[in-house]
Image (tube, rainbow, N blue to C red; front, top):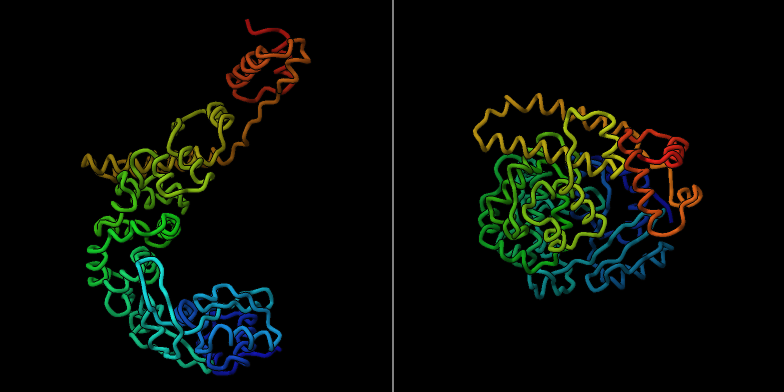
Length: 418
């Protein structure tokens, strides 16, 4: 079944693609009571492009599933216990959730039952700007003042802030993430009070959920301001019990470091980085980078190209470049802490560090051109001694600036090292 969205959806729906409009027309043709909900409504009001389209409906999940299947629309039962099915149209997902109300909450999970009351469903959502819905004809349903809050740049919990947090402590971190994207000026005072009084609830969350939200905060808009807010509210002390270096993190962001979550975590976290990685249950790749970027030598800004090639021969450019960002941020933070006028050092250091990073990016990583089989082919008996000879050849190659060819290395091997 194909179609297009009704004319009423055209006005104010510029953020929807033609494919999304066509898909919505198909869904609305069989589920006319369904509404757009959450982020899609918020982003349409702001004139932003829409990545994910979520909907809600008073029909039960089974009714939704049967209705869509009867219309020839592919359905995936993505979360039936929570009332969610996903319609797949032109390979794109459209989540459709039955209206719900919470029966029980424990700060992490909720037991829900179905309802037909749109306001009741909206009341269980986190923030007013996420609690709006939009009908097929384009009518906005706003029970808690979300549109006005969005216009004012106010991120505010629906109803009582403390209750919303106690329902799901992850909302503490979500508050800061949404504040960074949609808030302006000072954060909502009631929200900050409720967060400060309930920061301990974060420990009841899985660290995977915490790290998922923290990554988005560290790499999102206004990261330095948000992390400072989190420190004031006591949130950072709970997330990073090993300690944190707020000044270094702020200077890293202000210096223009890339929005790399692990690099920014390296700047923020104090103490053993392995402990931090284990505490947050980072992936192996993220753990390896956190350790690599936090440890090891940092090239000086006036280092020669030959020395840079030696650095690059030992490890990839990414951790080396990361260390230069951390060094730069540390120097600025230390200067600030020592009451040195920041303007005296910021501009010269910034230019020198930027030039160093461009050089690291521009130099191809040298590859040692000789292997153990070459040592054996040169007449050395297989065994531990091969590794020792290979190391001597490589040391010579490194000392020569990592530019000697395979032939030059083999010639050096034949003529010895005395």
